[in-house]
Image (cartoon, rainbow, N blue to C red; front, side, top):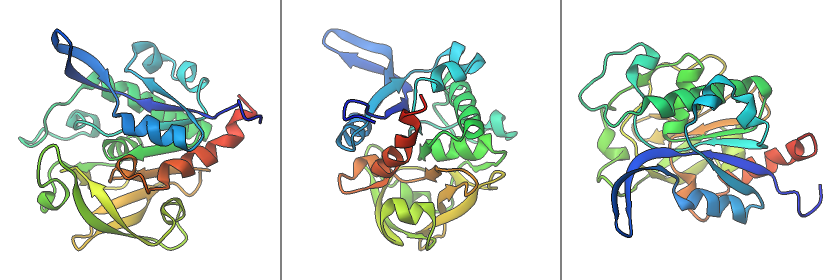
Length: 242
């Protein structure tokens, strides 16, 4: 791999109304710039992936372009996708985004493509693997106390886990903004991080894959975090085979 061959990392985009210059309430593909800045600093080329029906039908057409995939944060998943009735706290779902990310995640797992799932992304990963979600955590205020602001709490990580290696320690202070969490873990996933003191699963991974990591916190919002850099490092072997 030459210096010009940067790993290409796809970031799944959210879909939200947006405003710029004279335009208001325009439906837009949205990705916080913190993701692309962190990936660029780690030596990768970030590309944003909007929901796309062609990608739902043929996810390989998208994944062939990538050396790694990020399932990014955002709004809640439609509960029908994990066989649940919608509760009042579940809001702002977007089935187009859900279907696109489910297709990419499922195929990325089959291809053993390095995959980092952040917040909502970890929930997508869990459901794709057959797990379920708790639609509103009993102590949700610990993880989302103010809309639009990140909460801070500690996470304990399993020694020797991918999560601990990605973070660089067995305990980490994280930036958090979620009200849902894992109910039943999906097939192949193991819990590797827990919030303190409430014990919510904050990290899950698949030890049978090269790099499949879900974190319920937001490492892209912490300039000191090494989590996204660990994904980039794992993706480098993909460059020569692409």
